[in-house]
Image (cartoon, rainbow, N blue to C red; front, side, top):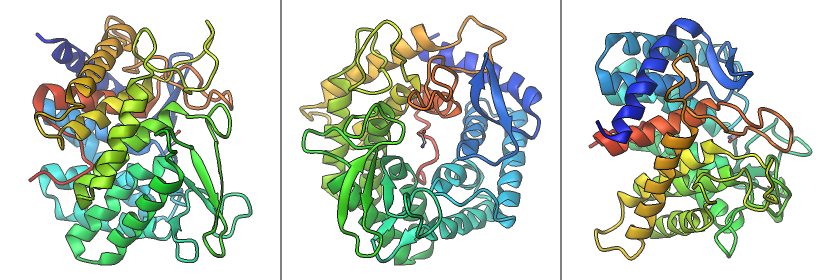
Length: 377
Ligand code: GLY
């Protein structure tokens, strides 16, 4: 059995036990070794759906499918109630729940729900500034003009909605936002700001900043990871080579800075001391993103060997040093993720998105199953 297969089998076993544990609730981040659960109210809840769909695709075991479909019904309820959707993370939520069901099952109701979700995301588009507002209400003094790099992973929902409807407003919003992110969130040395502020009235660029990073000008490792994967996906949908180049450069920046055990600290600018926290979820997202990036490179691409080596080192260390293999009662798959070290919020715990991207990367390596960010041809 390969190392990847061993890790997948362990993840599948743990997920099955977690279905019993969680019932209709959704895991978010952990405290004292147990996931904190919510009632489908957070930005993270799609990752549990995604894990269930991945396990179903790998095993064909109906237990996973039944549980995954239950989460989709919960997401339908959330949308119908218009609750807890007043942010840009609609892409994370509905790509991995209803869009996954559409991709796997060609379920028409799931497709319609996903299109409705794209409309909800479009409500975050700000025509005056020409960007997707990440957080807060329209006109909000602090967040009204703010974009964040994480949003690159929400754009696939809009590109996908364009493909299914022909309505260009979805694609135009995604492309304009991706261009703006490339120009202002990614810096000349291929590092990134977590967030950037614009004048809400006229779109004038104001300044970069951070929310979860070490300081305003630092490179939060998870933000860099969102960029690597997000720009590669924008390339897949648009074939604009600038997006591929951006993903590639951001990936080089990330992989050139791997620490001695190949799993990153929480911010590339945080001073490294014995107690400095890691973010295993940033490494898992990057691994999944580099797999997407590699899928677009020619066999003889000059960066291929470097990227493959970084991917292999990252995944090997995640499995050998960060996974919970060998802890049969553990709920999470990956230890030492950090939600917000800066805010002292789950600075060294399981992160449900870390678990999702870890499993996605494993399944892509082992079985060629690529997750649910785009339609399979
Ligand atoms: N998208 C929120 C985070 O990465 O913490």
